[in-house]
Length: 594
Image 1 (tube, rainbow, N blue to C red):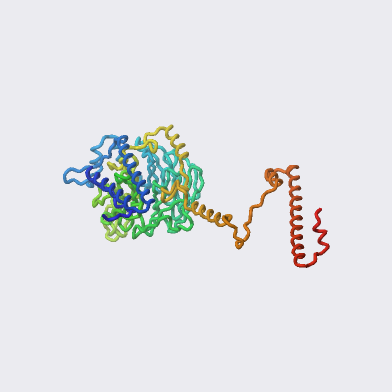
Image 2 (cartoon, rainbow, N blue to C red):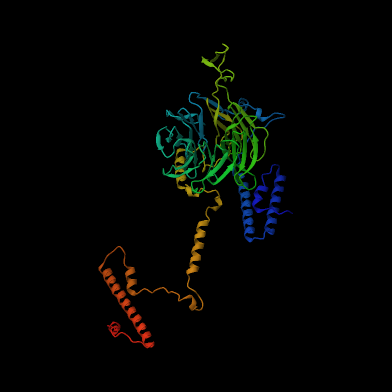
């Protein structure tokens, strides 16, 4: 049997599809591999590591079985009959097969005067935030169709993002980033964030991150208002950013096709970030992180990127290798992308920028066709490219060269951003004509954790959750690429302890017999009683007793110095007399003890 490297165990044992027989065979094969490696490994430390890894995986399997009892809700998907194809299903037919409450999630907001729009959902998926590029801000409780606030900032808006809950949200305006509350009142201006193109928020660290035309990644703590870090990426303007929730690492996509990973703890020597990957031949148009379970060992993060080269790639963030590659050139380049809680991928773009492609299970398996598609409704048709000299007259285009008048064609439907709604089967699309919400069965997580994000939380529950989030806030220093290093002794500390031990051994007193060739070992001087009494006195207090002790100590030092000098004179005179010489008679008075 061929020996397998322990570092490649998780890579070789990927997700397996099929019934319970295949899963049992996979588990048995995995157990045999671990047993074989434990017996053949010569290093004791490696054997212990493999044993602990096996115990950890068994615990995860047991926890998943127990959680299946507590989470009875199952995910539903579109199923075709016969030769039907799910990508041919339209939203109108899906809406007819749903109840009234689910059908309300399919709607359009026609706001072409202020588009294109960027959007964001709150963490519990209940609130929707829209930001038009011409200054229109709108926030609503979209499940109950209840508007919260709507105002005009009279500036260009590049991006909007919720913070830890719906009470605060950030807006990247023309020059600075502004914070508003749920009533539309301006709370704070973040002047450390200048010319921002995109925003992101780390919920467990309460950090607002931003990057823009200057290519400077900024971390701002929204709980204290302090600036945590400003990192120069040295890669030019950047408008693509997301983060990995497992470790809090920020992921940036640059114009040269490179994706870099950053943390606020990056050193000055790490000019290209923690990790730098060449993902596309052209600029990176968008990136998103998805979390997929392999059904055996746990949930792992995957990075999905799209570029102007017409490719969509799926990357394993554990090994930084390509898992799947999709060619979208025939369907049009993907300008924006998002991954749902259940691993569905939504790609916005198309040839005319008005089509959305949704892939199911495309991270772990290669799919030739999308699971679902959606074409935006044309607000008005587009102007043909062969008409070079046109004048718009009441919605009609006049060609001055031929004298013929044709129907004016202006496209307001270019997609700017797509985002899945958490804990719901809905996809939000921000485009030039406003906002559209479509139904995507099976995209959201059906079982939510009320301690994490509760779509039905009350006002009291929200206040308690906000206090708990601030108490459990993780410091920015814990954002690291390898989360397994947390709680261990750092290598720097271990090196420091090792150096101290070497110094102690170097300057330690020699043991064993005395060697006169190495010199007389120095012994530590003993303190006198006056020095011990003076050390017990407070240093910042001047008292009569302290002054007396200082005078007595000075006299004691003078007496010791005089006796030491007398001993040296006696030793020198004794040597002179032994050699037959004469001693200076005047020195006898100096040797006389008083």
